[in-house]
Each structure stands twice: as structure tokens, then as C-alpha cells.
Length: 214
Image 1 (cartoon, rainbow, N blue to C red):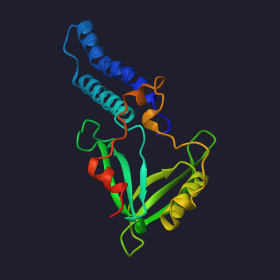
Image 2 (cartoon, rainbow, N blue to C red):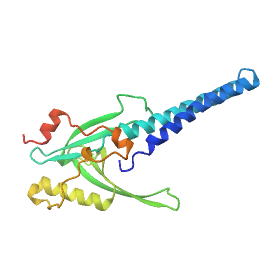
Image 3 (cartoon, helix red, strand yellow):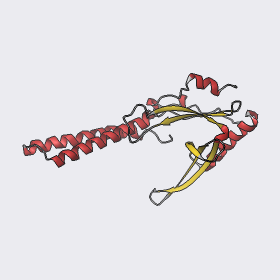
Image 4 (cartoon, rainbow, N blue to C red):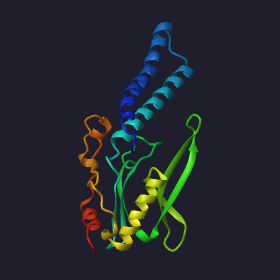
């Protein structure tokens, strides 16, 4: 979610590339004054499908994802509400597999996991992330995971604040000099992807439930 806007500008070039394959096929047919070979048709068709798939994926990944994926912690209900964007790279044209879903989870079933790996970034680069694992009640079997923070230090800080809030209440949290950042009201004039991205809108029943006691 941190880097957005590249796919929006890549899509027009990919679309032109997808049209270039059938155009090349027609050009060969006109030049030779004969029907193109089967192998040439298959190559052009494969190139067109691949470019169309990539263009659709990059566009939807940049513009369909919401401006933020917030997480709400409800101490009274001991529930966690996760606003998650789901997508399927293998099926970029699907309507049902793309979109926002709100997961309601039990606080007692969440575990924070830190991961640190070296990724293929030239001479090597350290990639850190913190995810929240959902375990099967009463066991340590992980049944789901979702993103929590991009860096381990940041994730430790966020997880510590979540634990303080859920165990002791809002009075245990530190005082912050500035109000929380609201991605819905961010200035998105210079980022086309964020301008086209839908704002965060919780379902009415979940919005009420996540902010109230039982």
C-alpha cells in the first residue's frame, strides 16, 4: 500500500503493447499477401492475452484497492475488525475475488509474527514485515494471516499499543501531539491511483458494532 501510482501509468503502455501483437500479425499478412502461419498466430495471441492480463492486473491493483486498510480494536467485545482488500493475480477479470471484506476476529486468537528476509534486490536487501496470525481457538494452528506493519520496529510499537489498549484501556496509551492520519482526507491530487481509489467505508452494522460495547 505504500507504493501506489506506478501501475496506473504502466497500464496505457501495456495496452498499446497488447494491440501491437495483432497489428504486427496483420502487417505480416499484408506484406506477404498471404495468411500468417499458425505459429505466428499463436505467438501473437499469447502476447495479446499476456499483455491484456498484465494491464488489467496493474490497473485494478492500483485503483481498486482502498486508500487504507484500517484495523479496529474493540476492548469491550474483545474483537478485532480488519478492513482487508482481497485480490487474485491469476484472475484479474473476476468480480467476486476482488474487493474489500471485513473480518471479525477474536482478540485471544491473534499472534504477532515478525519476519526478516533478504530479497533479490541487486546486491541484496533486507525486507522486514510484521503480520498478525489468526490461530484456531485453543491451539497454535495458524489458519490465516494479514499484514500489520512494514518494519519490525514499527510492528513491535503498534503491537505493544494494541496490547496496552486491550488489557488496560485507552488511558494506558501514550499521548500523541498530532491527531491520527486520515487517509480518506489526504491530498491525492498528485497521485492518480489514490484519487481513483475508493475511500474506506465500513459496513453500517460492522461500523456500529466495532465502536460500541455489547
